Image 1 (cartoon, helix red, strand yellow):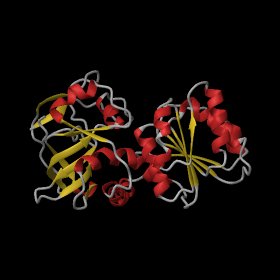
Image 2 (cartoon, rainbow, N blue to C red):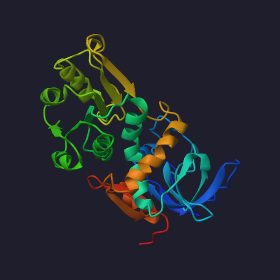
Image 3 (tube, rainbow, N blue to C red):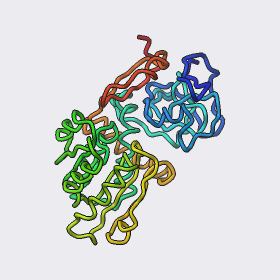
Image 4 (cartoon, rainbow, N blue to C red):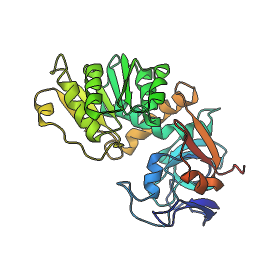
Length: 323
């Protein structure tokens, strides 16, 4: 078969021939890969920087995808925890980590949207004590996952969604996706945190894709303006675009009903993720969540890997495409 293969963590994957994988366990099956998304998580897998990396080389990147079973049925699947990922003509999947797609679902849309949408969906459904009507701040709303988070919070019944980020053009697009208000984080960090504190001090939940200094400043700015500090504020840490660490003010934990938790691989069981897949797939397939997918032949992986992605676009590799 052909696959995108990583031989060095310092170089882009190369499209080349690779031995066909074989099912080993009783729940394993071989599928034709129809579409697989180039997510940030895939890039960290391919450069060895992700916390789950084993350092094993060579590896085929790709953490999820849409595949065709031998009976012709289509499934969305999460790749097994091996060095043989989804950027290939074929992949071995554990059927227990897959769900059937509804009839008419577009494999490219599903492959593009599931990973960026899953973070906020699972955070709100599995990590937070969610109630319809809650006010939500998406901290880092201008990335793909942030745009999805705004839509998902609204879809799940949020009373208000506030989006904060640095990219003004992407911020301007958020009201059409369900944002009640947007806050620019551009410019001086202290001034940005003050703007955010004024706008978002009464939210119930923060979905944080930034972390680092912006989160550190925002916590204080929001909590000190809160009208009732005994009312719970749940801060869900998902991404760390602005830095891997943040100095959480001790006063934030003592002087307010402030809950800080994370959502990601390990904090939710595989079974928990799997249980959420069907409803999320239905939301994507039905058009309830907007997706900006760009499909490319897998043969162009080395070229596309190095090219800057268009804002808001999620690259999807399609092995069967030739042009």
